[in-house]
Amino acid sequence: GDSLYKLEKFKDAKLKFDKALTIDEQCNLCIIRIKSADYFITRDNKTEDWGKLRKEADANFLIGNYEMAHYQFMWLYKHDNNDFYASNKLGEIKKILEDEIDDRMMRVNARLLLEKADQEFVLGNYGTAKAIYRKIENRYSKSIDYLVYVKERIKDCIYYQD
Picture 1 (cartoon, helix red, strand yellow):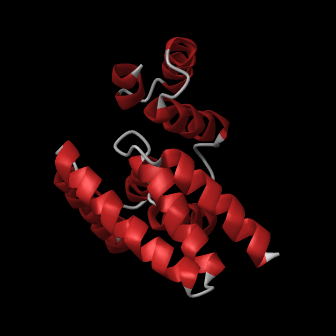
Picture 2 (picture 1 turned 180 degrees about the horizontal axis):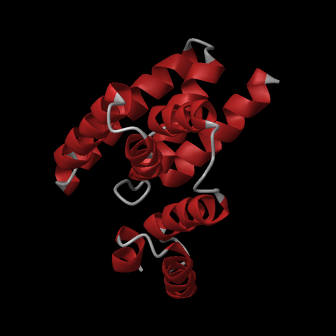
C-alpha cells in the first residue's frame, strides 16, 4: 500500500491499506493513509481553491498529521513551484520526520508534549490542552503506552470546554 501511495496510485493504495486494517485494526499509518488517499481521490486536480488547501495543510501540520500536511503542501508546490511557503513547510516536515525516525526520540517527544498538555489541563486551558493531546494521539499513537490516558484526557477537555 505504501509503495502505491508514494506512486500516487491512491485508489489501489487505499484498497491495500483497508486490507491491512483487517489484519491490524490499530494501524495508525493505515488510517492516516486511507484518509489521505480519500482526500486525493475526491480532490479535483484542476481545483482553484488553493487558499483552502493551504489552510487545510496548515491545520494538519499544527495537529501533528505531518504525512497528510506533506502531501497537501506537495500539491500546492506542484501547482506553483515558486510557492516559498509550501517549500519551507515541506522542509520543516522533512526535518521533523527525520528527527523522529528513532523510536526512542519519538517517545521522548511524546513525553514532553504530554507534560505540556497536562500542565495546560491543570491550568484550565482545556482548548490548548486538547490540541496538544490530539497532536500526541495523531503523531505518537504507535510509540506510546499511554494512548488510553490521552484519549480520556481529550474527552475530559471536551467535557470541561463545553
